[in-house]
Length: 324
Ligand SMILES: Nc1nc2c(c(=O)[nH]1)N[C@H]1C(S)=C(S)[C@@H](COP(=O)(O)O)O[C@H]1N2
Ligand SMILES: [Mo]
Image (cartoon, rainbow, N blue to C red; front, side, top):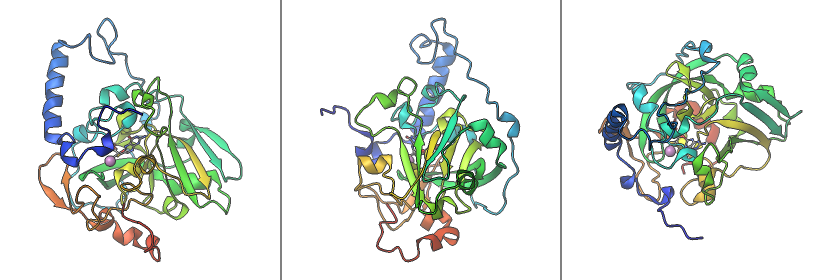
């Protein structure tokens, strides 16, 4: 197959738009949009120039939820504006600037399938699932493999609760999570050289760990589309590419799932993807990270600062490639 454009995973980190430039460009674009110079050409605008109103989120009344104080982070929160506008969501484009495109994601109806090695396969509407769980807020560090980082208040519920609802069989060893698939909504999914739909997975021990969250909200509100509404996976000690967005299916299995990035480039992106400052990405160091909203680099921490909680999960697994 002929591929003309440089693919995302081939880009050195230095080629990824710096977030400072990103902010400036976004400010410029906002100014232009306000002056409506480009209104007719901008995607998401109708012929008469008014934007289709995004659907109100029916779960909005569940927010804000009470903050769980067990997990504290000793650095400032990233601004909501940045965390909800500097995104990675290849379904809507390979740049960090996908907010507008992502507004096409229909937030309801949204059905979550629980299948594979379970007592009984289930399909649950997201709002029924939300009735079966108790939402809480957790401030977590977030670390992308590209060495940018943020500090974000997620709202959600422990994934352990979803595992209880799913009732997996004793032979299940992994959970595979899958993002929606609809190229008519997500233009990136028309690019057939990517292994759609976006998937990733984890072990049952990881899925039932208290830190492992299924996020439904951010900054005390439902997740906006660009951050993976209505359900998104969060393991704060792993690199961001594990954190599957807009999940429609959880499959319990005895086969280790091959993630989207692992399928693309197994030499660079593995199953475990635990953060470690001493294990470089093949093309750049992971020793430091840049906090969104600042140009300063800070040291990366083992397990992204969560080693005291998750270190035991990996005892005796030294033969595995735990840090890529
Ligand atoms: N479905 C889907 N999930 C995804 C991605 C994606 O492209 N598609 N990108 C991942 C990567 S690489 C990162 S860093 C985070 C970014 O999450 P954020 O945009 O909420 O910061 O989402 C992860 N989850
Ligand atoms: Mo990422």
